[in-house]
Image 1 (cartoon, rainbow over the protein chains, first blue to last red):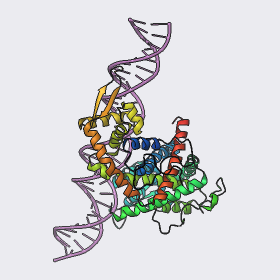
Image 2 (cartoon, chains in turn green, orange, blue, yellow; image 1 turned 120 degrees about the vertical axis):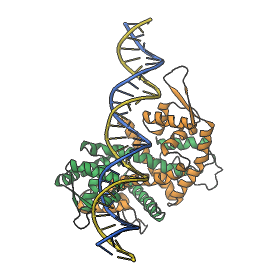
Image 3 (cartoon, each protein chain N blue to C red; image 1 turned 90 degrees about the vertical axis):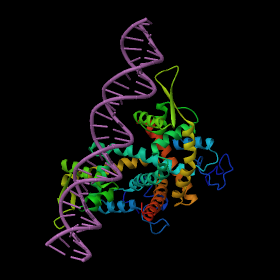
Image 4 (cartoon, helix red, strand yellow; image 1 turned 135 degrees about the horizontal axis):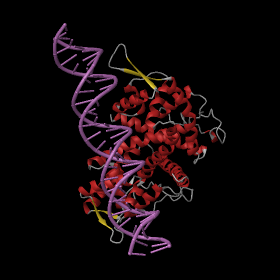
Length: 193
Length: 193
DNA sequence: AGCATGTGTTTTACTCGTAAAGCATCTCCG
DNA sequence: CGGAGATGCTTTACGAGTAAAACACATGCT
């Protein structure tokens, strides 16, 4: 297992000590340092969750920052790209509420983004003929071309960033995250959140 | 497997297919669905990175939402709690710029947060006697009590959320994230970003 | 038909974070 | 000394997201 299993400071009942040292020696992970500080201040608390949640948050922040680079060159923010991407990958028109669900953002945010993207000629809207409350948004040719042009770049860039981890570890990580995410999403739905 | 793309190491090394099927059966992970859509539209692209980055982002979003619940009961936002936590875990005063570095936010944001937290009586400021440009921020007793009161709740809550994964997997996940994060942070520093 | 109620979308008012400019103060060096 | 430049923090202007209200339309019930 992960080497220094029994945590320093011992005494903690349900002993599931993760944290430091797992074969890899010198590591600069800032979260580990933070968790270490907490443990010296509150040796009795189980800091385990921090090592996952703190890292997920921090990774998300760093990855986004890295991610944004190729998108910005195309003048797109990530939420905008997500919206265009949703249209591209589903292959058909979507209503604003579908877009909101698909991109995990609020309806109001979608309204604004669609407005902007329309002005830039990347998407078009049309009203539904039967139910005139609903709108349908679709990619213009320019929008489709933009997405198709950026996506490979974007993936290559992401791939390079992730190459910090070898292929095996990437696979494990994707699997674990998928499992966690799957159950989290299940829970959320169950709790009607 | 995912690798329509010949990736270094020959597809996914040891035959550890990512995406679907890894022992766990029915999974509702939305990212998997999205990736599937992309693959049917662009079968030639290596969608591997999405399965990590997309999931990290989504997990971060869901976890934050879940996380925020216990904090909000105490009337704190996460960035505010991070600031207080930084003061608590280091055990001593910090200057605004140290707080900014410690909480990964901009100096301006720290200024505002400190102002608010001061008004609520959770932190205090004093000017440095030698260098009158710098300020020192420290927790009040009320602030320290608040952090110490919330933290166990917070950790218990996080722990419950993460219990979707068994202890072993949590350990693996923490390790992998730590490794990725460590190298990402190294890279960022190297690239002076 | 006529009205109450529900649904899809947009608008409004507000919060929060940031980048860039603005102060105040220190340090270095002639 | 005394100014040039660096440093630490704050202020300002602004963009983006959200929740809640507003709007427009549909649907169902009597």
